[in-house]
Length: 434
Image (cartoon, rainbow, N blue to C red; front, side, top):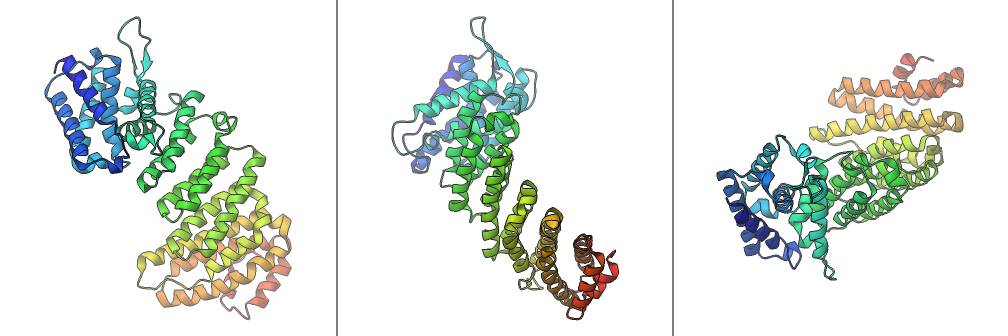
């Protein structure tokens, strides 16, 4: 393929990819035309040897933008992918050919390659050029309407998404990049479509790992991110995948704040988690929330004592909730995982607060544990799951040993007295190192 023809084909597709309306309102004929044009371009590049190093920087960047836009579409709206199942493989073949022409392999190496055709053109890293060009093309689609330009240029959006997820520090390293990429993430988060929201959360998580702490903290972007995530948690938290990513992402950014601000946000976050966990009837979702509660406790440390009453209420309600039906094997396994996680949370709580809440801690923890262990023994007898009971016993013994440490004799007498009502506790008393 002649260089001029290639340049014309690439620019034609770039123009086709610039919509005047939201991508969901684009006609199927327009999508088909775009898909067919990209397919034809990729096939022509496959059939004819092209010296990609001799292409102008603009043409090469636009070609990569098209290829990576197709690959990125697999993660987002899937509009192109649904029309042509082969187009992603063709896109990878094209990018592999481009990489091999520079004697490298893989997206990361290609993104870090510098290009520039003559002495008058400064050589720049390909990723920087893609970042600049996608930003320019997307901004050009802003015309004062209520429709996000990201939805008018989905190919450009998806190219920026995929390439940014493919690069790491130090390629991602300065405030100028974050000035573009952070608002980009937040706009993806605000999209009403689940897949696009997930893309925004995935990219936000990636950026949090790659950019230096100071880039987030000093600019106030960490705090702004937490505020945006709090809104999304309220509006989209019913979706488990989104909730899981929002919770994990929130914790990442809570840890990026100064210590005092970090505690304030962690307390707010914990309050919401405890309310949600107490009201949640779905076991899988509750398990997800419990995992976030445990992780947030690591941030709060001894400050968890402030929310001790609500935390104990959550643990007690979950431990004493009606069991899952025996025939639901998969749910039984998750229920057992939930019980062990609850005991892990309780052990952590005891560890963190024993020097603050003792001896009131005994009254908070021991009675519900006694009831739970008695019920667990009865249930285990019905389903013959001795290994699980052994795991429960081990966890409860660890908690009791910790609670007994300030006054061993008093605690042993208490357990002995309780065993009259809850006979199963005899097993625990025998194994405790009191």
